[in-house]
Image (cartoon, rainbow, N blue to C red; front, side):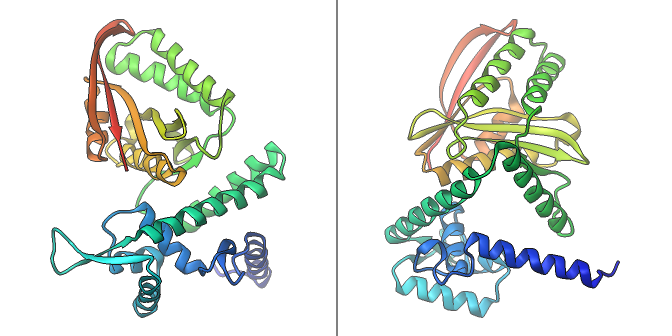
Length: 306
């Protein structure tokens, strides 16, 4: 369907507004010496391992020649380095140097402060409206090229009730756990809402065809440690990689927040979840027998260090 002139003008007007509001057209992004594209490269290298120039070209949608010039400039500035891949000697892996990591910390801090400043000027209900609208824009525009049938968003009013209800139902159906588990989940989500720290904690809700199909949350333990909690995927959404996606979001966010370690507690018989944690790089560090939820269980503590 062809767009009308009014529709095109509306989109162009929004583009001008959002670039002005977010300071994207300033000479140095976030009052730094780096352009928007340079900052994106630094962010990607800080949050993903084993990236090559080809990966960045696809990830950022850049012309290969243009990216090559930017990488050369960042390398000259001592922010990135190229090292030979351990698995393929023909490849060069891009990594941040200590100076590059310092530049990322500065950019990340200023980005957090700038967004926090925008949101703090809004009422809570307007913050939720804004975030929901952003998620809608991303979902609509990304629909044509995304292979996942689900999308992730931040929690909204009513979501904590869903998390508690579905944990109670599914763990009773799948493992025969009693209502004491539902009580534990209710306690966890209540603590999350009552002590919520937006810059250090987050809950992700997965939706598919307008229906919630999964969730997970990352909570602060202390300044250096975060805890992954309440990973859940509905039966209809299993096998789609959603569990892995939710865990990866937690890991990415934990790294952005500067946590030194991410921990989690699970049970030895929850094999699908354990597989996801192991694949994501978590390692089992402790086991303890206990009797809870009407069963004899073996609790496990897993850890992940960046």
